[in-house]
View 1 (tube, rainbow, N blue to C red):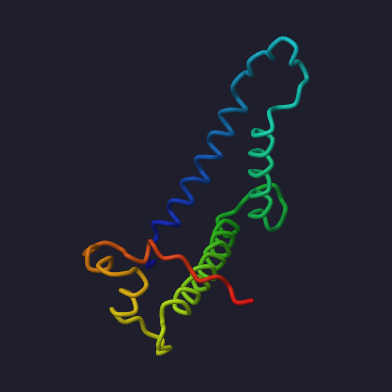
View 2: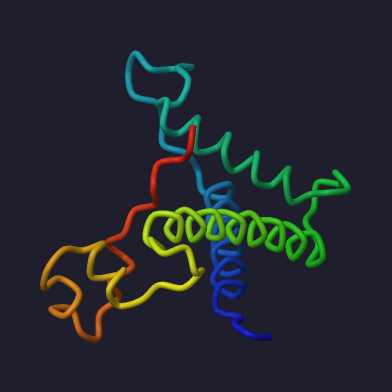
Length: 139
């Protein structure tokens, strides 16, 4: 595995969410406040439960109400592919904006022009691309 950190993080999050849900289902609920008996949960809670159900349904490819390791891996690979596509679109837009001579490479001069005088040299050891925003899409 090249970099298993994102996979392990996602797996830990998924398992943590499942554990919290299981514990919450076993705990007795607090009695409703006066005047709130039978009232639906606050909007934020409904949205969170709906989102959790949506993510579960997306992973549960065979709709058996359970998520296998293979289903989870497939869902993660799909999500990774979507992120890679977005990163590619970002880099394409960034190069379109910064690569002024159109050679497919970014020179130090092109980078310096993008940030203005002195900016590039003032940030040694840092990641200057974090400040960049992609160019607006062509219309």
